Length: 222
Image 1 (spheres, helix red, strand yellow):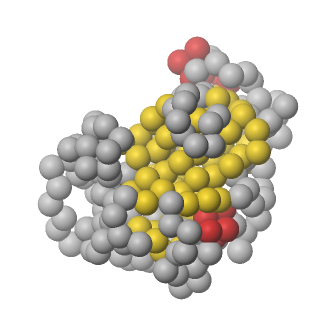
Image 2 (cartoon, helix red, strand yellow; image 1 turned 180 degrees about the vertical axis):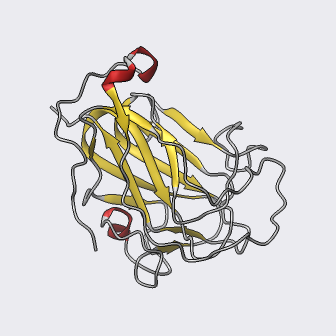
Image 3 (cartoon, helix red, strand yellow; image 1 turned 90 degrees about the vertical axis):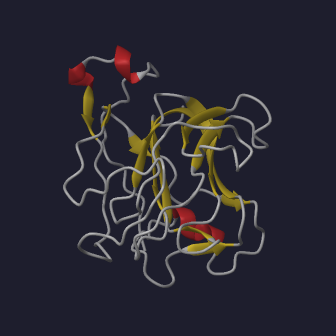
């Protein structure tokens, strides 16, 4: 199980979008990655918008100096009140190993999980680990943020792999990707929000939806 671990102690630079920050104000995002649960080239998966799988080191993702982990231990809600396996608090408990007892499983179709950060803050990055002990792709992966818990107003979509609007949230141009231990970093671009909602619509192995961990990084709330 994990632990709240602020990444950096420097004061957060400001709420400016990253393009307006000088390079000297940016630092690599430091992540505590779980061990790989599969090795080698994954079995072929055919999707029109699939990103080429790479087992190498991911390029550094730069965030403003002073960025901290905001989501650890924060409350989680979902579209599925009764997960098939696991508990909602697994999503922010820090355990991203992917082993039995570390993930929550939701029913088929479009499902979402939502993290309440407790206050609105400029966000730098959202990192998600779905089930990653097997090479698979989660369909219609969409990440949105808002200050409205119901996501009726002020909604910003940060990532969307849905090419045919099958999730009903509009089409997106982001690439689908094969799950692995490194997770997926979503650029939050300094967007201010209290709530983070992530959608999926089954995966290439079955119709179910899974989350090991979601980490949200940004400026400390004032």
